[in-house]
Image 1 (tube, rainbow, N blue to C red):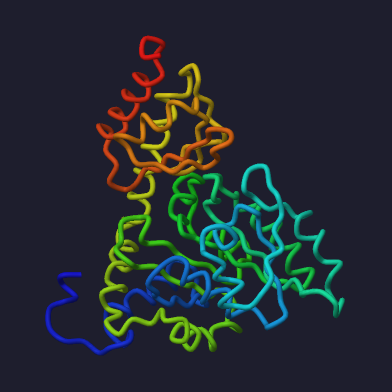
Image 2: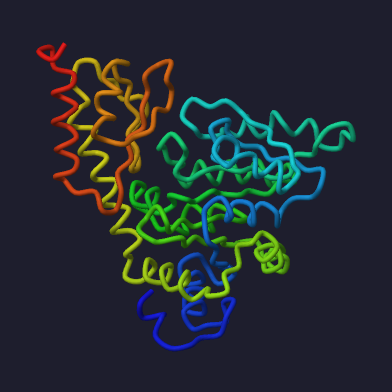
Length: 325
């Protein structure tokens, strides 16, 4: 960002940093991929989804999906569409979740399923394999639907799966996805990536209309380009994932703690005794995922150190040790 701040540059993305970023997207996701830098993850989702939806359409997604739970009704308010949510055991849609909604196609009395939206990584920290994504895409496309991937933590999924970004996106048939930079070390930098050429023409206008076109776009693109250079995105994500595994290993056998979902990314979901949660929150900040069951979500990041993790583990052990109760 400091280098991009040296001198003048054309506005609204007609700068060399944005051009480099756009070429990197093609190199990584395929020559037909087109990248659009945006400012935040929710905005990336709205811009990408808008390119695939009509006024009477609906989105099939898990009931835990970010667009359904933590974007303040943006899809309903800004896109004017209905969300068809499906309960899942691990945050992942199944092909049956898609086919169960296809009966509505052609019925003028109901919203028309048009897009399947999945998150990679899911909101429960789990990852779709490339085969799982491909199977969902196959079912969706057979039913005339398009597939959107919320990739706020796309890098973490690739690090866990040990594969390229392309393998579970372009090669699996995904139509539009977001690529998260903010959760992987960037400052207000995300991207919408169109893998279906037919949606590309409207995306520049939708990005502008959705208030996601920055006048000084070079500062956004410079960050994304830096992440995509020399696999920095992968190094950051792999480190965050490793810190989550370290945390899980440090508490998994502790009486009173149960790990609720497989640790496949940089998220650890743990059930704790209810009285332990406020004690830990006096020193550490984390989200209570389900108050009724005492499930909390612990997130690690690109800059989480082993010392941070070990310090947290030590406090968890002290809080739950019999001597303190």
